[in-house]
Amino acid sequence: MNERIKKLFEHEKTMKIIIAAGIVGIALIFLSSFNFGGIGSEKGDREFSVEGYGEQMESDLEETLSSITGVGRAKVLLTMENSVEYHYLKDSTTKTKEVEPKIRGVLVVCEGGDDPVVIERITESVTKALGISAAKVCITKLSE
Image 1 (cartoon, helix red, strand yellow):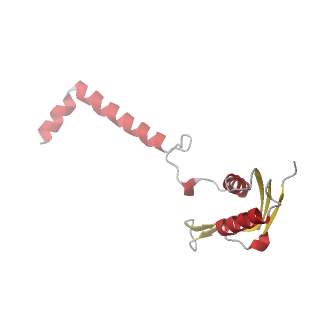
Image 2: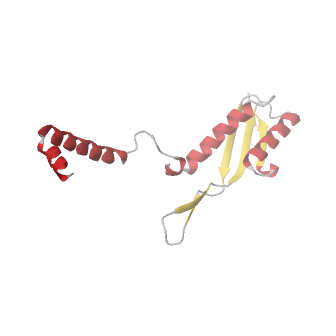
Image 3: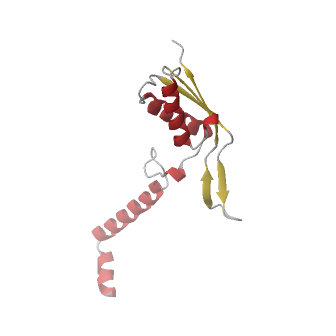
């Protein structure tokens, strides 16, 4: 067995292949530490921002509410109670939980904001989607 290995290393071509494979392996290890445009990143790896979270929620709500019959064009404003909270294991850097900010209130301004039926549909949709009480939702008509 040892003689076979010695014979492999005696050939110059074999040595070049082994060295090239080693260099490629090291390069791949080095490149794996970079994140190219979010490839392979998971939700937990992204940096959380309250502004981004609020803007995304507003955008999602506007799109969803606009698709409800009678609502028409809609604009949404969210107010947040606090920023994100991170919970870690005691004496550790291991994150166990990430608590998203609580929504303090929602303002919906839409074309159908003066129709009681539309107001009820919006209120029910927003309260159930965000898990908040109807007292935290304000709906009004969009000016023309």
